[in-house]
Image 1 (cartoon, rainbow, N blue to C red):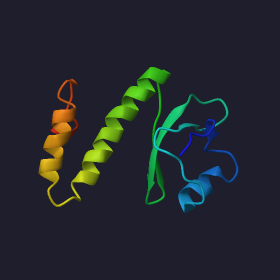
Image 2: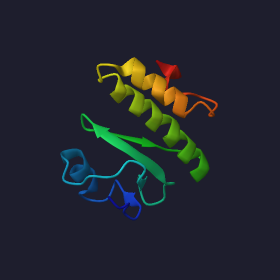
Image 3: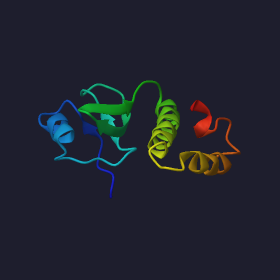
Image 4: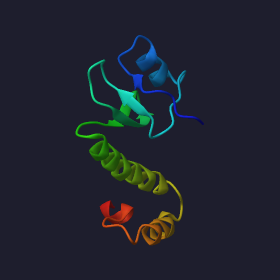
Length: 105
């Protein structure tokens, strides 16, 4: 799936298409909320709520996106029968990072 040019969620039809599933975005897609707003990173849509990272410089937005997408990944793992084993695998993958994604459990 290719990333699209930065989308403005306030444009006519974009918000509705995203909520209804007519438009599907890849996690990490750059988005904006209004014409003059800073860029944000799209994560997902759940129950009609758009999950995105906002605020600060592009680097700060990217850092927030990485943290929140790791948390979202761990939340999905909890639905897997052996999620603790999967979590340990994630911890091993991220062992050289300052924060492990499963530490929030």
